[in-house]
Image 1 (cartoon, one colour):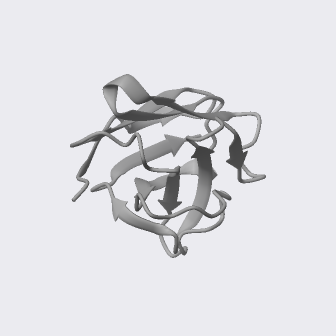
Image 2: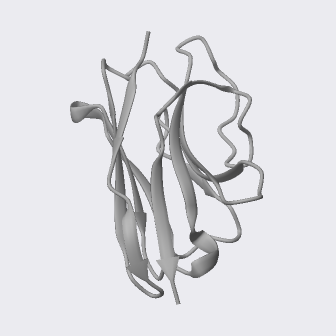
Image 3: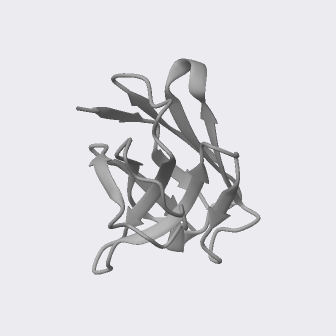
Length: 128
């Protein structure tokens, strides 16, 4: 079983930056898709970014494209989300996720149901 431990987050002013980290309890070498999702107050779960660990390709929600960057350090079993030029609408709880080793489909950012393992979440608050 894969356990995902998140860190990072916090409170920043609009235009600021934060980096979220997600460390897996074991190797994610065989995990095809890794992703970041968020949920704001009164809002549903939104796919933020995903990465295909097989080829390194990434996918982003239109709302964060150009501002957020997803990356993976496979040697350290760590997933990152670099968030720049943060906006108040980025406020919410952020979660990292990983697919099962058996999953071989696509890794599109909006898709949440392919993920079997989830981090505990970390709060991001952006003030204007």
